[in-house]
Length: 264
Image: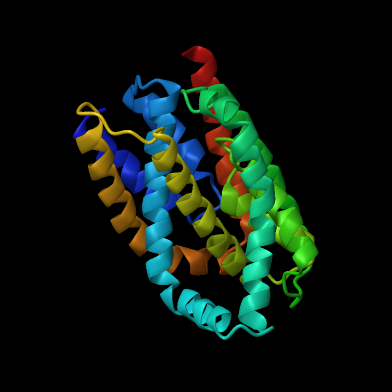
């Protein structure tokens, strides 16, 4: 992978992370279009690093919320911040289980299987369409809801299933307020990304070679910077816009991906 490709893919990651259109799916499509020939493990490594970059941009944008949560936890009392943190932990359980026991199987899906990505984008579209039909409420996310949303997040580890789309849609279908669902969705992924990076570094799986060093670093920077801009205005877009628009987009891209995959 050359520097230009890394920049393009980094920008794609930064822009699509906060919209319900599957950033991992778009990365796989981008890699295929750009002719990336990385083996699945290297391809997944690049994807993880870009997700790490957008996780950092999420921290910057949500720094006030995160600091409030930390202060609430340090009070060592049963308060709103403590309960929110417990819900985040509960939501992580399904993804942690999948990541620990099905990591090798997931890696094989990040090797340019564009037809599979297209099919998963169609599933994302269906989720968004149903969520758009759900009634608006002011109900907050409960602990039980957090676990169910966590299952949706685990399923969204598949390329083509939008993580934000799956978690926000699931939350809305459970009757939760869309604004609260979006906030929970963007904050719940941060511990998982950092946990994934820490696990791979300790196990030696996250290794940088002379062949991929520069591309990964440049891709990281591109994803972080574009993620900062995207997170500031696209989160508002997700909250206020009709999810059906994104569903139509996913159908369009999904069909193109399936055709491209079958012709490849």
